[in-house]
Length: 368
Image: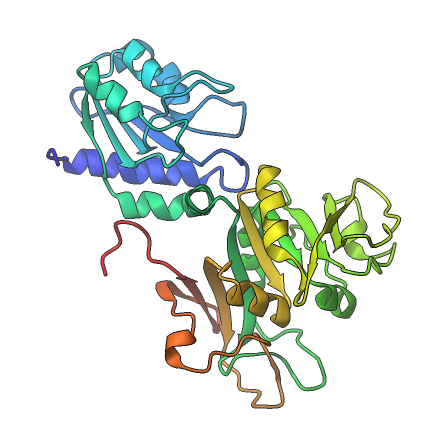
């Protein structure tokens, strides 16, 4: 790889920060950030992709840079695209602007969009791939995972005790975790396209699944698994804060829903509603990330079917013992080899709780 200066590394870190601004707002497109450096290494422009139909990060930055882009270096988190969609190819925009050098972090895994690096290289632009790839993979993980696996990236979120319990024997669970952890959940929701709960959680907790605590962003699509279509018309997920998709078994009579909501039929298997079919349909609709919030059996179903990509766990310093309700119920590995081995990415204290971010596969480019 060509030499990358400390200034260029700093610019890539800034590009990653810019990309993160639009998390949860760009699907079915990725989050992308771009920084333009003049020949002396000074930042002359920044940009990020704000959403489908808006200019790509490179185009936004080049527009700000104007004539200062000639002979400059463009630092971008994702390989510039080579295809024409709602907007033109970013590779051509960089060429037309007279950029002399392009650094990018992650190759574009989309067959139709890939090839921008090759186009730039063939036109005489110096191209440097893989700069701070792991950092850029992490910020764009939801989209990258979805495109690579042709289904939404699934994150299982749970709050529990140190011994893996989500509620006391009497069913009480408010509040196992503290206020910092509960607020962070809403930030996590805002980064996802959809949030999913099962019928047990729906009936027991009547969740709202919207955004609170002054968290900014577009509320995710609320998805409720309700095989028999027995959802109450006054359920909190049926208010007008965000659209809701009620998923029922094939051939089940459709419940009458108020407001901007929809019913979706999926096949029924021996294990219940076919969650793989649901994942395929969500992906077809342009949703690239799914946050699984409840309950324990639903999480076990995703884990058993190999549909779990990430886990965000909020662990409280509390012990409830064997009588407490488990965070995962129905998935039983008989041997260590049958268990789902997770890769720890982050451990952070939040008040008295600890937030863990784990994934089922390490990020590409990640050591170990």
